[in-house]
Image 1 (cartoon, rainbow, N blue to C red):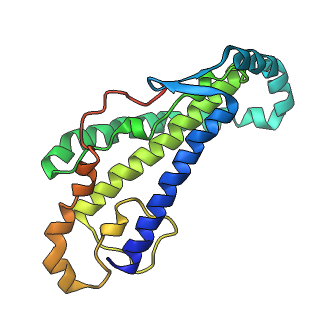
Image 2 (image 1 turned 135 degrees about the vertical axis):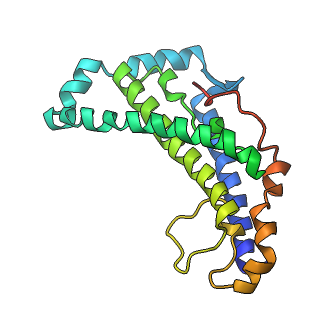
Length: 209
Protein backbone atom coordinates (compact mmCIF):
# COMPACT_ATOMS: atom_id res chain seq x y z
CA UNK A 1 0.00 0.00 0.00
CA UNK A 2 1.38 3.41 -1.00
CA UNK A 3 1.37 6.44 1.28
CA UNK A 4 -1.50 7.92 -0.77
CA UNK A 5 -3.54 4.74 -0.40
CA UNK A 6 -2.89 4.71 3.34
CA UNK A 7 -4.09 8.31 3.69
CA UNK A 8 -7.21 7.59 1.64
CA UNK A 9 -8.06 4.54 3.75
CA UNK A 10 -7.77 6.63 6.91
CA UNK A 11 -9.88 9.40 5.38
CA UNK A 12 -12.59 6.92 4.42
CA UNK A 13 -12.61 5.56 7.96
CA UNK A 14 -12.99 9.09 9.34
CA UNK A 15 -15.80 9.85 6.87
CA UNK A 16 -17.62 6.72 8.00
CA UNK A 17 -17.13 7.72 11.63
CA UNK A 18 -18.44 11.22 10.86
CA UNK A 19 -21.54 9.81 9.14
CA UNK A 20 -22.23 7.62 12.17
CA UNK A 21 -21.82 10.64 14.45
CA UNK A 22 -24.37 12.58 12.37
CA UNK A 23 -26.82 9.68 12.72
CA UNK A 24 -26.27 9.46 16.47
CA UNK A 25 -26.85 13.20 16.81
CA UNK A 26 -30.47 12.57 15.83
CA UNK A 27 -31.10 11.15 19.28
CA UNK A 28 -30.60 14.64 20.69
CA UNK A 29 -33.66 15.90 18.82
CA UNK A 30 -35.72 12.82 19.62
CA UNK A 31 -36.32 11.27 16.25
CA UNK A 32 -36.17 7.73 14.93
CA UNK A 33 -35.72 6.41 11.43
CA UNK A 34 -37.94 3.61 10.18
CA UNK A 35 -38.24 2.38 6.61
CA UNK A 36 -36.27 5.38 5.32
CA UNK A 37 -38.63 7.87 7.03
CA UNK A 38 -37.88 10.07 10.02
CA UNK A 39 -40.43 10.07 12.83
CA UNK A 40 -40.42 12.65 15.63
CA UNK A 41 -42.18 12.29 18.94
CA UNK A 42 -45.63 13.87 19.23
CA UNK A 43 -44.34 16.50 21.65
CA UNK A 44 -41.45 17.37 19.36
CA UNK A 45 -43.81 17.82 16.40
CA UNK A 46 -45.95 20.15 18.49
CA UNK A 47 -42.92 22.26 19.38
CA UNK A 48 -41.87 22.33 15.73
CA UNK A 49 -45.23 23.71 14.62
CA UNK A 50 -45.04 26.47 17.21
CA UNK A 51 -41.65 27.57 15.85
CA UNK A 52 -42.70 27.68 12.19
CA UNK A 53 -42.53 31.17 10.70
CA UNK A 54 -45.54 32.39 8.73
CA UNK A 55 -44.82 32.36 5.03
CA UNK A 56 -45.96 35.98 4.60
CA UNK A 57 -43.48 37.16 7.23
CA UNK A 58 -40.78 35.05 5.63
CA UNK A 59 -41.34 36.71 2.25
CA UNK A 60 -41.52 40.20 3.75
CA UNK A 61 -38.29 39.77 5.71
CA UNK A 62 -36.47 38.37 2.67
CA UNK A 63 -36.43 41.73 0.95
CA UNK A 64 -37.16 42.86 -2.60
CA UNK A 65 -33.74 42.02 -4.08
CA UNK A 66 -33.88 38.49 -2.69
CA UNK A 67 -37.27 37.97 -4.32
CA UNK A 68 -35.87 39.13 -7.67
CA UNK A 69 -33.40 36.22 -7.66
CA UNK A 70 -36.19 33.61 -7.54
CA UNK A 71 -36.55 33.18 -11.34
CA UNK A 72 -32.77 32.86 -11.70
CA UNK A 73 -32.21 30.20 -9.05
CA UNK A 74 -35.32 28.21 -9.91
CA UNK A 75 -34.60 28.51 -13.61
CA UNK A 76 -31.64 26.19 -13.04
CA UNK A 77 -34.10 23.39 -12.28
CA UNK A 78 -34.83 22.84 -15.98
CA UNK A 79 -31.24 22.01 -17.03
CA UNK A 80 -30.83 20.04 -13.79
CA UNK A 81 -33.77 17.80 -14.68
CA UNK A 82 -32.39 17.38 -18.19
CA UNK A 83 -28.97 16.46 -16.79
CA UNK A 84 -30.58 13.98 -14.39
CA UNK A 85 -32.44 12.30 -17.24
CA UNK A 86 -29.41 12.30 -19.54
CA UNK A 87 -26.97 10.88 -17.00
CA UNK A 88 -29.44 8.25 -15.79
CA UNK A 89 -30.11 7.15 -19.36
CA UNK A 90 -26.38 7.14 -20.13
CA UNK A 91 -25.42 4.84 -17.27
CA UNK A 92 -28.46 2.60 -17.84
CA UNK A 93 -27.38 2.01 -21.44
CA UNK A 94 -23.59 2.18 -21.27
CA UNK A 95 -22.49 0.90 -17.86
CA UNK A 96 -23.67 -2.69 -18.46
CA UNK A 97 -21.71 -2.69 -21.73
CA UNK A 98 -18.58 -1.30 -20.06
CA UNK A 99 -18.93 -3.62 -17.07
CA UNK A 100 -19.17 -0.70 -14.63
CA UNK A 101 -21.43 -1.05 -11.56
CA UNK A 102 -24.32 1.42 -11.76
CA UNK A 103 -24.48 4.31 -9.32
CA UNK A 104 -27.46 4.15 -6.99
CA UNK A 105 -29.19 7.48 -7.49
CA UNK A 106 -31.01 7.18 -4.17
CA UNK A 107 -27.71 7.12 -2.29
CA UNK A 108 -27.06 10.70 -3.38
CA UNK A 109 -30.42 12.41 -3.84
CA UNK A 110 -32.06 12.60 -0.42
CA UNK A 111 -35.21 14.69 -0.08
CA UNK A 112 -36.61 14.59 3.44
CA UNK A 113 -36.46 18.07 4.98
CA UNK A 114 -39.91 18.96 3.62
CA UNK A 115 -41.31 16.80 6.45
CA UNK A 116 -40.05 19.23 9.12
CA UNK A 117 -42.98 21.01 10.76
CA UNK A 118 -40.93 24.06 11.78
CA UNK A 119 -40.51 25.03 8.13
CA UNK A 120 -43.18 26.93 6.23
CA UNK A 121 -44.14 25.80 2.75
CA UNK A 122 -41.66 28.14 1.06
CA UNK A 123 -38.78 26.87 3.18
CA UNK A 124 -39.85 23.30 2.44
CA UNK A 125 -39.74 23.96 -1.29
CA UNK A 126 -36.31 25.56 -0.94
CA UNK A 127 -34.96 22.65 1.10
CA UNK A 128 -36.36 20.09 -1.34
CA UNK A 129 -34.74 21.95 -4.22
CA UNK A 130 -31.36 22.20 -2.47
CA UNK A 131 -31.49 18.53 -1.50
CA UNK A 132 -32.27 17.52 -5.06
CA UNK A 133 -29.74 19.79 -6.75
CA UNK A 134 -26.80 19.02 -4.45
CA UNK A 135 -27.64 15.33 -4.45
CA UNK A 136 -27.84 15.38 -8.23
CA UNK A 137 -24.37 16.90 -8.51
CA UNK A 138 -22.97 14.19 -6.25
CA UNK A 139 -24.73 11.52 -8.30
CA UNK A 140 -23.46 12.93 -11.60
CA UNK A 141 -19.95 13.28 -10.20
CA UNK A 142 -19.89 9.60 -9.22
CA UNK A 143 -21.17 8.50 -12.64
CA UNK A 144 -18.54 10.69 -14.30
CA UNK A 145 -15.82 9.38 -11.99
CA UNK A 146 -16.56 5.76 -12.82
CA UNK A 147 -16.65 6.68 -16.49
CA UNK A 148 -13.28 8.39 -16.22
CA UNK A 149 -11.82 5.32 -14.53
CA UNK A 150 -12.86 3.27 -17.54
CA UNK A 151 -11.80 5.65 -20.31
CA UNK A 152 -8.91 7.70 -18.91
CA UNK A 153 -7.68 6.55 -15.48
CA UNK A 154 -4.65 8.87 -15.32
CA UNK A 155 -4.02 11.37 -12.56
CA UNK A 156 -3.46 15.00 -13.49
CA UNK A 157 -0.02 16.59 -13.33
CA UNK A 158 -1.57 19.18 -11.01
CA UNK A 159 -3.97 17.58 -8.54
CA UNK A 160 -7.43 19.24 -8.58
CA UNK A 161 -8.68 20.82 -5.37
CA UNK A 162 -11.39 18.18 -5.13
CA UNK A 163 -11.23 14.68 -6.58
CA UNK A 164 -13.94 12.06 -6.99
CA UNK A 165 -14.04 8.71 -5.22
CA UNK A 166 -12.35 6.77 -8.05
CA UNK A 167 -9.34 9.05 -8.47
CA UNK A 168 -7.32 7.06 -5.94
CA UNK A 169 -7.18 4.13 -8.37
CA UNK A 170 -5.81 6.15 -11.27
CA UNK A 171 -2.35 5.72 -12.75
CA UNK A 172 0.41 8.25 -12.23
CA UNK A 173 0.78 11.08 -14.72
CA UNK A 174 3.67 10.38 -17.10
CA UNK A 175 4.06 6.72 -16.12
CA UNK A 176 3.98 5.25 -19.63
CA UNK A 177 5.11 1.79 -18.57
CA UNK A 178 2.58 1.65 -15.77
CA UNK A 179 -0.16 2.71 -18.17
CA UNK A 180 0.87 0.04 -20.64
CA UNK A 181 1.03 -2.68 -18.00
CA UNK A 182 -1.98 -1.83 -15.83
CA UNK A 183 -4.54 0.02 -17.95
CA UNK A 184 -6.85 -2.96 -18.40
CA UNK A 185 -6.72 -3.89 -14.72
CA UNK A 186 -7.49 -0.33 -13.62
CA UNK A 187 -10.30 0.31 -16.08
CA UNK A 188 -12.07 -2.84 -14.88
CA UNK A 189 -11.10 -2.42 -11.22
CA UNK A 190 -14.52 -2.04 -9.61
CA UNK A 191 -14.34 -5.02 -7.26
CA UNK A 192 -14.50 -2.72 -4.22
CA UNK A 193 -17.91 -1.47 -5.38
CA UNK A 194 -19.22 -4.95 -6.12
CA UNK A 195 -18.12 -6.08 -2.67
CA UNK A 196 -20.41 -3.39 -1.23
CA UNK A 197 -23.29 -4.62 -3.38
CA UNK A 198 -23.22 -1.66 -5.76
CA UNK A 199 -24.42 -2.03 -9.30
CA UNK A 200 -27.78 -3.46 -8.28
CA UNK A 201 -30.94 -1.77 -9.47
CA UNK A 202 -32.05 1.28 -7.49
CA UNK A 203 -35.81 1.42 -7.08
CA UNK A 204 -35.97 4.10 -4.41
CA UNK A 205 -35.58 7.07 -6.76
CA UNK A 206 -34.16 9.09 -3.87
CA UNK A 207 -34.61 8.39 -0.18
CA UNK A 208 -37.27 10.39 1.52
CA UNK A 209 -38.98 11.40 -1.69
